[in-house]
Length: 262
Length: 262
Image (tube, rainbow over all chains, first blue to last red; front, side, top):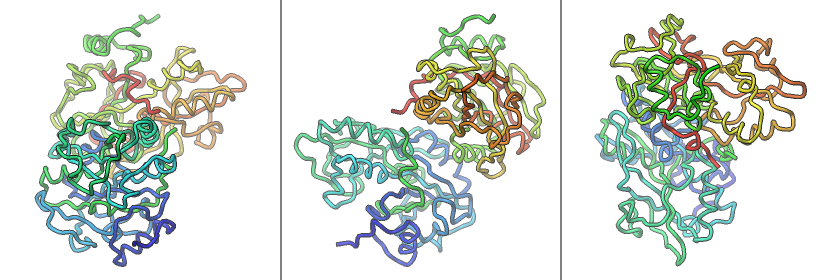
C-alpha cells in the first residue's frame, strides 16, 4: 500500500523524488498537472518541437527549457535532473538505463520538452463520475503502439501511441465531451471501439503499462498518449535522449484547471 | 467596390493572387481559415517556433513548411512565394519592400510558419449576431502594440500586439464564450476595457490597420493578434524575414470549423 500523497504540493513532491523516493506519480498532488518528459540535444530540438507542433494530440507541449536550463516556471525552484522519480536514457534509440537522477548524463546543450499528460483529464473524468479502469484496478494505464503514423518532422518520425480507458456505451459521449475540453493534454479520443483498426492485435497485451479488465458493455476508448515522443525517439535513434519512466511523471506547478477550455 | 469573392475556393483565390490580384483578403473564400505568415532562415527557426509555443495566443501555429518547401497540405498545389496577395520583406528588422511575389527573395533555407488569424473567429461572431465593427465599417481591424511583453525565446522577443473589436456590454460575455472555442486562432480575449492598462494612449490611433468608431455603451475588447510575430521580427532584427502585408493573408484549405473546440 503506497502512502497517500494526494494533498502534498508539487514542490514537496519534487523534493521527495529529489531525495530518492521512487514510485509512480498517479494520485500525487491532485489538481496539479503532471507531464511527460523528452530531453534531446539542441541540434535535434527544432525537429522535436516541429514534430510536436504537427502532432499536438500525442505531443501537447506545456513548456520548453532552453539548452542547459534545469529549471523553469513549471517547476519553480526545482531541477529537471533530479525531480522526476525515474528516467529512461536512450542511446541510439535504445533504452540503456533507468536512473532516478540524470545529473551524470547532463550536458549544456540539452533541451527539455515538458509534455501534457492524460492524468489531467482523468481527474475531470473521475469528477464527472466516469470510470477510469486502471485507477480503480490500481495499475498503470494500458498503452498501445498503433499502426497510425505520426506526421514526421525532419529526422523525427514514429507511430502514434494511444492509451485506453474502457467506457460504458452510454457514457462514451460524456468521455468525449469532457476530454475535448482539455486540448492541451491530449484532448478528445482519437479512436473509439475497433482496436484492430489501430493494429492492436490483443487488447489484453498492451505494449506499455498494464492490461485492464474491460467489463461487458464497455467500449475501449483510445486517447493519444504522451509516450508517442519516446516511441519516435526509439525509431529516430538520436545519439542521446532522456525521457521519464512510464507512469513516473514530472509533477508541475500548473493547475489542471489552467488547461480547461470552455 | 471590390468584387464579391466570398464563394470562391481557396485554390481559386490563391490562383488569383498568383496571377497578380492585390487586395485585402477579408471576406474571400468564406468558411476557410486565413493565416498570418512568417518566413525566416532555418538557423532562426527553432527560436521562432519556441516563441510561438510560448506565446500561443498571439502566435497559434497552423502549419510549418520545412526549409525550402514552397507548398504543403494547407495550400495544396499552391506556392507560398506567389499565393499571398502582398508580402513585407524585413532586413535587419526594417521593412524594405512590399512585393506581391517573393520568388526573387527565396532561398532553400527559408522556413515558413503559417499562423492562425482572427478572421476565423470573426465568422463565428457574425454568425452569432455579434457586431464586428471593422467589417461593418469596411476597414481593416485596428491593431495596437501594447506594453505587455511576450515570453522571449532565444533571439526572438517583442511586444504583444492586439486587435480590438468594440462589443456592447451585454454581449461581451458572448464574445468571450464564442472566441474561446477557437484556441487555435487566438482564442479568448486577452483584455477587456481599460486600453490605457495595455499602454494604448489613443484608441483612435491604432499602430496598424484602421481606427473604428466605438459606439456609446460598447467596451473595447482586445484579442492577441497575429501581427505579434512581425513585431518580434522588427525587434529581433534577423538579417532576413518575410511576412504578409497586414490584412493580406494566406487563404488556406483548412475550414474554419476544423479549429472549433466544444
